[in-house]
Image (cartoon, rainbow, N blue to C red; front, side, top):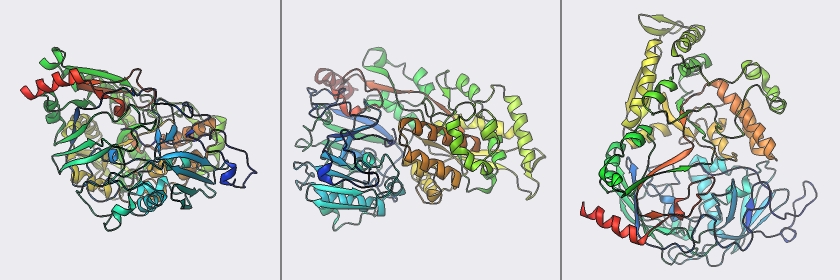
Length: 609
């Protein structure tokens, strides 16, 4: 799933004001959308998103697998393991168009006013907006949501909305956010992504407590069944207040969305083949190539679909935990990187399906290449004394040669330079006498076969390693408290990165439980580059800041980059329909529907098995 979209933009038709002087609301036009770099792609009065079918039939069901377990229906807090799909219950002020890089259209908010100097933004709520219990959604609910999420929710919310200085209900239908002196160009748009919670519902409830209640929202679905650890079921709200809002027309078509829980991906695959699941997002190249040769597919009841993904590939990697002393030496981290043999994995396990990931902004203009440009150097030079000289003078790392032996020889030299020596087949720290060892923490046995070749190569260097596979709940608890050596982590990127970069790399979040700073980075240079990226006032400035950040992260060898595929692999029972072409940037399953005729045939077949 992509992360929250971020970036910079210009508001359509914004009036010019004196520099540094905030405009009055009466001087600012009310618009229907906020767009990245220019006007929104869809005009005021548009009927529906281009990839949605407003004539799509309603009905049917979609059953998918979730792996592990859950014990909470509150996805916003640190405690508990939340169920899959809970965001379907909540509306946001604005909604993204998956066919544009980053444009947000009104959902709960029918109108938007943004100060030309971005010192404030106001949202006008639609009078028809209602929670599922019939109570209106008003400005006080927005204020409550902001304060509750940033003060009591996961650290992510505090990082994402940190530049907001105040939020007030101007009247029942208008909410105003003060943005102060913030240089975050993205902030007004990402405020539109905030889920809106019902203040009256939470008045007598503890927001921070784990709960299994069917929580109240205003979105297109409500929770219909909670069976912890087994399944969660959502039902479409037939009188949903927002069904005719243009951004929703032709979306949210399926009556029942079911997430069945399985402990293991292998069992989930067999459940799909048996007809117990309708759809499977396949992340295994081996499975995709070999596991779908079964009668239902051969007879045309199941199909395999590959949908291109227009977002940057981001970074999936083995993440080394800098909170462990052994990983604080860059040479040690670089040596461990050199032991990863992607060509062997791709040939022997992945059927040649993947490409090696080098960049944190892979497959985008934000990826650093070659030596730093003059624009990059302007950002990097103030930090020259804190950065490795290689940042300025050498081509980028991670595009490693295919031959493993030279890489391991280089790794041995790096370990010796870091103060290690080989004794009786082990790599020993000459100062402390400790043997260098690593543990890879996993929650699924599916990843073990990928981790074992790395451990074998590390063993050749004298580094002892093992895999520890635990259940999902234990895995999440250890992740929250940063109790691991190495985990497989993901740092997804949109075409317009912004405030979420603080949560990924920012010093402030290095020791906050459940932050996404898995590495444990606390580096003033990286903090400055993140601030520069967030404050970028043009596409060129954003690309340059991202390239500089990418370059510094890559020369830090904080992770062992893995691989990527710029597409979604979807296996499904052939009862679904969708509008083509697919949206250019993001897959939107909410625009799919169940074909009445094919759906009935498939469901009859599934019931008869």
